[in-house]
Amino acid sequence: MDNRNLILTFSNDGKYVVWNKTKGKDRPFAKGILKLTNKGRHLKIDGLEGDIVTIDQEFLTLSHPDRPNMKFKRYTP
Image (cartoon, rainbow, N blue to C red; front, side, top):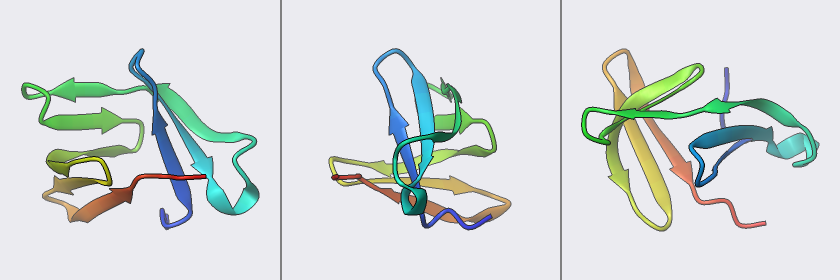
């Protein structure tokens, strides 16, 4: 699956929502509860999992041994 047009949002209560940017942010594509393990260094949600390589105000980068690094940019509407 190509994730270039997906928006991933997190809330303070530990939930996430995945939106499809090309179809507008009006209906969620997927949602659930995120899990942080390994002392907060491993992020896991449905269908996406990886070690947090970097996280700052602009980017979240995850690594996983079975796939290339995944980089998420902060969404600004």
